[in-house]
Length: 597
Image 1: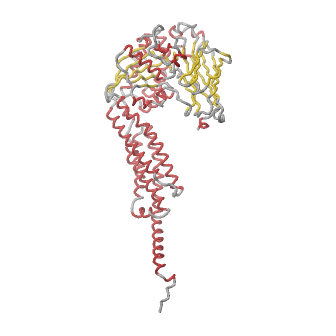
Image 2: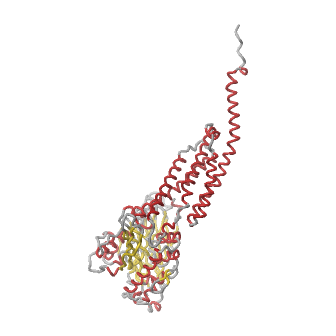
Image 3: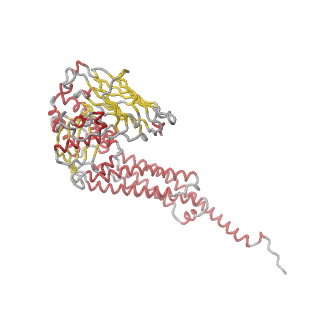
């Protein structure tokens, strides 16, 4: 007799898998009860830790390494706790479950990644100080700088590894709270990676710059803004700085008068025909004119050619600085006592070096000797280790931003480091990142009267509003003001007023560079037509040079209109200009930076 089949509800075929499923659901419920509180703990630990990373960064930048060390230790406690909470069999089993598993896996990866960064980057970083760059007894420790470079490289590798780890997480199955945090952390690491690469590059080059691989010689030229040039001023005073295994010393002091300057000589080197067309060969016949173009590599090439006419010492670099930049540096070092009895401060450096010195020393040789004395005294102060490193760093960054500090080197590693920075002293090669108009001034009075001149620039563009196929327009109004009176000018030493013009008159070349590929359509002087001394093109930019003699108490405004090429990529509209004795206010309207993003 055949047995009747058991009803399905009584069959083991059903109840075995159902029982297993119920057990699994029950285990998952128990597991969830365990893991959810732990996951929330992980979240709380990371939420507490992450803001501390920004705090560590701020404390390191401010130079408070002790506070940074304490904050980093606190941060590590939280990240370590978060990472530990994601360990164990229950968490690992939870990662194998559908849906919730991907989220738990992502949380574990984030927790472990953040903890690794805290342990291997943030905590060690608190041991880094800008004090490593301070000279001790005239020497910077090259070995410590090399070790710092190695540490920066390891930081970069750690951040790159963390970035790759986070990018490997598939965020598609994650809940918003987890996926968003993964993306935020990944973006933060992108920024950290960029910063570390910027730090790593100079640290890699610095040991060789400091003579770690052999003696280096750098010529520093000081541009006197009271006799203005496009790049700053007349580079009359110069110092040769020698660096050997971190020990820094002055090897030679010289001035422009020690070189062959003559209207009958050949240019010191073959000039770019475009440069000659605008400025004439005079830029290569007198050292005071080598800064007449705004292109610092041109200045450096001319200076190097002059140097090799007189000296056999090869140059490993040329650095340009001016008294205004020096005043920024003195804010960090404090006052410097001069052998003359003067006390050089951040407040009096500019008037003393650019004006008052010519009253005391009306002969060029005497004033140059005073400048050399001042430079030596400041150098000795810097080499003694005086001053706040962070303050000095900020002063140098500000000087570079204002075109008061520039550098050139024939060494490929240094040149690569300078390329694309303000230190390079060049205009952008195209308009894609910045649409730049250059506004420059060259004194033709043969005087030191630019101490009494102020500049102002107002510019506008419609580049954000033009349609495809249309050409953008640019307008620039450049104003110079002569602040001295005729009566005051008559009391000035002849070395200040110069021998060629009536005291108080200031003759100036206005040199304007348009954007790459543009045309300078017109220029008006105080609303009237004015003939140009030269027009042409340099590196794809239209250039106009004109001259105007400014009377005491007079202002003059030169207005330029320009048309850009159609269908180009135009980046943020900016103005590059000559660094004057005082700041030049620049107003740009018609296209805000955010409009060009």
